[in-house]
Image 1 (cartoon, rainbow, N blue to C red):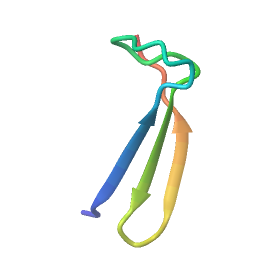
Image 2: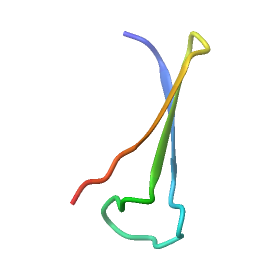
Image 3: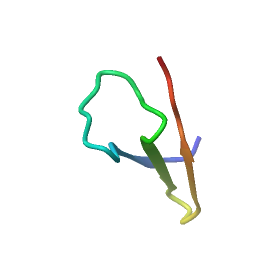
Image 4: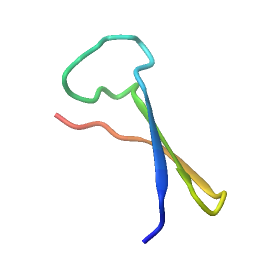
Length: 42
């Protein structure tokens, strides 16, 4: 398993209890790699 740090950004500062389409999640892996994406859930 790889250690990661996840950063969540609420782009419109909506402070909603669920993810919205404009919210972003950035994941930085311990090995220096990174992934980014959009995660929307209801």
